[in-house]
Image (cartoon, rainbow, N blue to C red; front, top):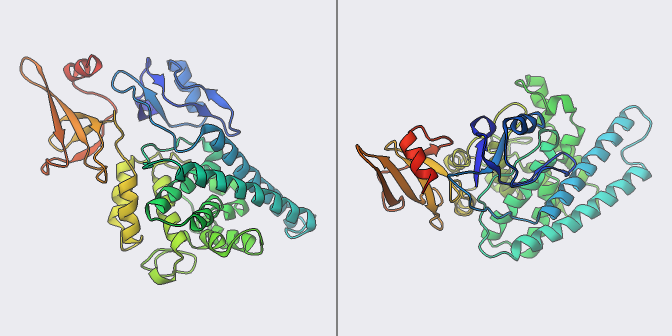
Length: 383
């Protein structure tokens, strides 16, 4: 299975994972043979990248959680956001107040639902042995905010488990991560979904989502203080360059530091209205480069151990120009997998297995989506 931008997908490949619409309904089932007309429909549905199985890779990538739990979680997050947005609009028109009895009952209902989902998510992930993140989550443009909230939650939990947080901290981390962007329910959708660069005024409005989210959550008795503070502090940075308050290392809550890393990774690797997804290795390299400056150094080290930027079956380009197929992941060193290099010689094609952990003179330059050399292409197809 390979994660490929739509413009690099060729007819004849098979869909590697189910595609869902913004309501969680299956648009296309995995295993569907992709034709040009289907690829056009996928683009029209708001997707820019998909998972495929083709002649180069047909391995399975295991989901972090069960698909039905994912659909339920995203649906509940969406309902919560929609309810708050509607209440906010009514409050502005003076028809209602955000703190009236009806809205407080709705708030209680959705927070209780998210608390229940949090327990399922924590139990689901903690019951798995040696959880690794070896895929990015495909998001529909219409439901990006809700799916992003779930992805950040799963990444945060994986990191929290690696940091050996106790069960209580994991529950607080989970519900806080699910609600970390709840303040965006108060931001106009035309700004959130704007494809062009935001103006300074619009950027200020978007950044205000941390304060608005915290203000909304702080009076909720069903949430713990550590859960609520995540919404307020997940954009703070160790060097004081973050927002809303420019806090520094010792002033930032531990759980918020975890969510900050997960939030940036998922944002980098997701297709968004105004930019295409960056490959996972670029997201990891950015986070690693910012360790100790923006992000907690030890947390970054733990995160890098758990995220696999080049899953088995990924085609990569090496620093010597060779094309290689990832064969095996080296535990704790996901940026240095074992690969199979395929080289075109004068009269034949040569195959060579290399462990990049031992070959310090070679590095992976990036993911390769297409094979430029016909002979190498033919060899890989018939390997």
